Length: 283
Ligand code: GUN
Image 1 (tube, rainbow, N blue to C red):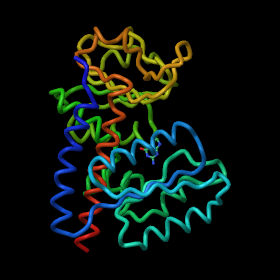
Image 2: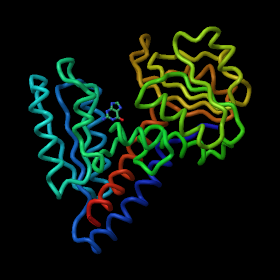
Image 3: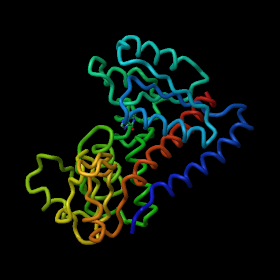
């Protein structure tokens, strides 16, 4: 079974749009998401465009601020400071990666925790790991929703996450653990990786290498979640971290690329923006 992220994301966005229409009547304005893009990285441009498109679809106000990659760290932090102060701004997202002369840590830390729609601020991350209320990072949140939608049991299952990034690998491992899976975090240096991944009931792959996961790495009946967005070196087409064609018959459920995790990340961003908006408006 192929799990369509596009379809589930559409359902979530319809629900968000309905809530936005109600909130506009109740509170007099729509949620406002500000997205900052530094430079011209084509992948980042495309992600930011997608976020603006989804914002329009659900009825948010979206402001995309584009800055040249010559902007200094201090200037970017100053801009974030102004947006933090602006009561009409509910959510702030700085598209990553940033140019090398800008510290991503400092920039993320500059965003007001209450407006951190990505859930990347250290205080949000700390709350996540301490099981306190927090904004959940969008991709991990989307992955759990996909598994639930597909009817995949998480509690008591063996989950293997390939990848240990702050954005996906670590937080998705934590969310799976909180749902009572037994979680192994593997990576490019894991010894006998195929032996480890074959044991997985749930395999989440976020390593950023085209078709990294081959059929011999997937156990019969596993749920396979592919977070990768890569270019296939042969065809030049978009492809995931999982060799989809080779693995799809072994998996019980599998996400496609494109149309799997990607749209869910954006749908969860819409939900997080609502959360920030409600906190902001009720202050
Ligand atoms: N770059 C890749 N994924 C993300 C994301 O989820 N948020 C931001 N801000 N940048 C990213």
